[in-house]
Length: 140
Length: 86
Image 1: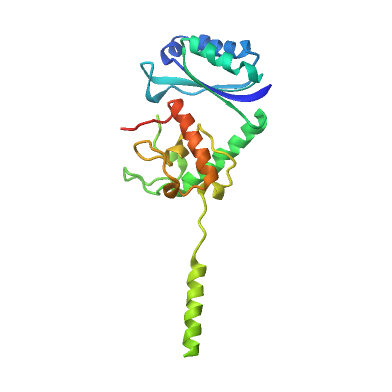
Image 2 (image 1 turned 60 degrees about the vertical axis):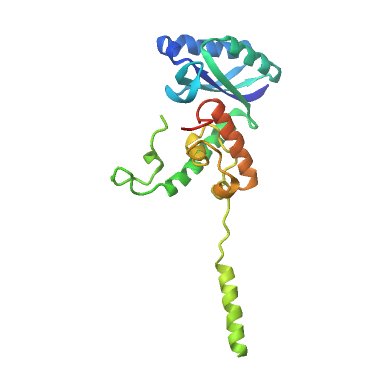
């Protein structure tokens, strides 16, 4: 059993119609291959950087789970057969999941403190900016 | 005469000291790895067209340039970032 981080890009139309069933499908796939899901979150629907299978928008699922290493390729193959999954990414983590989550929280704190330093105090629309990361334009 | 020479030498030394050592932004922040989901940071390391900035432009050290590279490529695959911009 190794810790993995998985991201699934899901058809936004099908997710919009019945979110629970799409979520259940992804979870079911993971569990079918012996994964123990430790965290599962859904990102808001957002615009894709480029078109995938005719879709301009997509919903992302981000999961952290433990799975035996030899079922990775089988999981990829099953994802390809599932129509509602447009794309998937599995990354093996170096640390176990709780430490990874802790580290990533620390990472965001540090990495975005740099943004705060580099943000201009004045924004383009003439308003007084906060000079903080939340003043960044939305990525959509 | 001798004194002038000494003063010149001293000036040179002073100039040399003023040189501040610059380091890679990620080593400066004390980050351990680079998250491929962190689009905000990764976008700063790309040109407007979506090309990855070289080390000379980004100022990254070799270790983090390698990590940035894999992170951006992962983000591109998941359509979080563009392969080619407009």
